[in-house]
Amino acid sequence: MDALKDKSKMLSRWLRHRPDAIGITLDKRGWTDVAELIAKAAAAGTPINRDELLQIVAESDKQRFTLSEDRLRIRAAQGHSVAVDLKLPVKTPPPVLYHGTVQRFTASIRKHGLLPGRRQDVHLSANRETAEAVGARRGEPVVLIIETFPMVRDGYQFRHADNGVWLISSVPPQYLRLPENGTSTTL
Image (tube, rainbow, N blue to C red; front, side):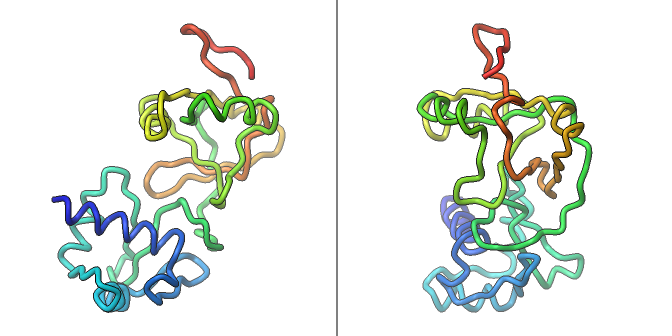
């Protein structure tokens, strides 16, 4: 199973950040040809067959990848640092979304809000547990609460990825709350 996990990580790298690492090209919507991906992955020293690829797509805990209806093309569901336009529709989010981070970033977030960094969008989740798991990847998690209705009222647009992640270009600090001893306070 570790081999599939490693291959999944490589797929994320290639389809989100470094398609050039194996010589594939993403179209403007982030899609690439499955057969070409398989061939170029093998040539780059990471052989992956079609069955493994389908298993990775189906079993990815975060549903990171999307196959086209005809299963001939694949793309990352979100998280790109390369320029793509996934053409995700604007949707009305739930009243509250969450973002997981760690304490060392909260001073900057208080000042600048949530920014996408190297990615195209800020990633938000619909539940606290997912945000905690994201934050825990870097240390003790801090879960920020995003007040979405005031943002929508003020003209911000949210998009919803195929894997359930909510995306937005940024979240200014006035829309964020930081839980404090079980209660929430404005950042």
